Image (cartoon, rainbow, N blue to C red):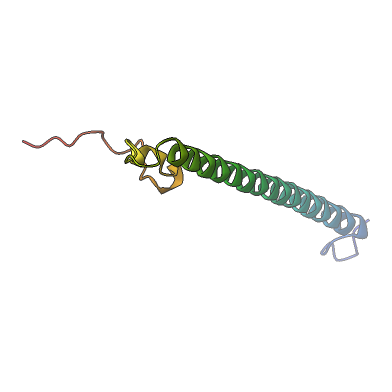
Length: 99
């Protein structure tokens, strides 16, 4: 099946190589599209959760002001949005060892 010189590829080998490349390409595109869709859905859910959380915090804050109109609110910092609080990462120790 090879040419008289014995060099080069035959048509079948080229077609098999092209089919393999096309298969890998199509699989990669499908995975990318699935990941993009999942990311978009998660961002939408996250935005909705933030919106719901903000609405709840505004309602709680206004309810607290209606219940205590002339008094200063105790634990006002507890009413701060959790997104505005600094979070300690798990890689940082909870205390500093000073010797």
